[in-house]
Length: 340
Ligand code: AMP
Ligand code: TRP
Image 1 (tube, rainbow, N blue to C red):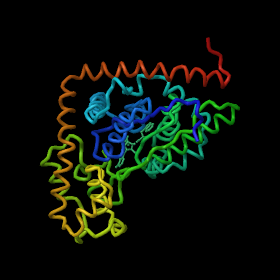
Image 2: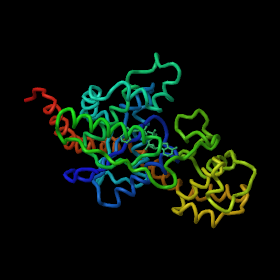
Image 3: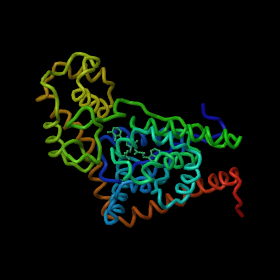
Image 4: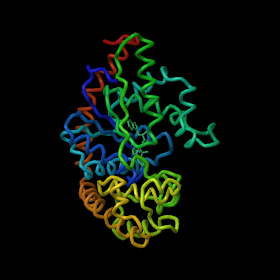
């Protein structure tokens, strides 16, 4: 359990490495908004550009992608006045604490990370050192704010366990109770939204096929087209959710529908059991377009004033520094470094 001395604080991040997907929305953004509106937490949300550059990012597009992601947060319901919204590179505490944690984390821990293995592939010799150290920077993101709760999609579970290991090792090595042991928040029907082309792969902004994902900027026609083309099996929808166990593509579409319509998967099955895909897919597309349409309109409106987005990120960075700088200064102090 988290020590009661820590302020209930949420931290989460999204990489501005491309457009936002329905996976990001259901697995992350929508849940960030719920936690913000719950009112029990201070919320800090970050566009993690330092993480994005662990693989090549074109400097001509990175700033624009970061603004678009910020617009996606706000259009989904993040209020930059009540929550802190900023980009990581503007707050140097992240890079600094990331280095300190590079000296706490062990090579063996990093080598076991499945995201490292997936992203580096066979050619580890040619992967950036930053890609290997990625989870230590992520731990720094979270712990620079003494965050107690971190909402993420299922793919980040292992990184959050490593964050807890780093906090525990630091506390143990230096004989302090300084960093909280953060609680991952991974719940709801859509913590792992799968690709529309392959029910065993997660929906991702980096998938080469645009047909594999719904983007928050897709219009209603495109959403309909993508769901119609989504891979499924020929069977109609069964009576119970349990019957979808060995039907990953079918289950994924049911999960998406449940998350979008705010129903439990059992209630969804009560509504759609026996339907064929010709009936279910257009209905799903309609529900998705109703949710995404207003978000994508609002993103376009916000993107028409990039200077205002930069101002919001600058303001968020100032507020982020106020929390993170003293925590990193205290970390240096605990480690025995001289500072004036
Ligand atoms: P990323 O786009 O990899 O920076 O992910 C940002 C957040 O969105 C993290 O909390 C991820 O776990 C979440 N996320 C990304 N893709 C998916 C997905 N397909 N299903 C559910 N959550 C996702
Ligand atoms: N690694 C996360 C992802 O790819 C993004 C991330 C970076 C993050 N720092 C974080 C998520 C801190 C939660 C908390 O999805």
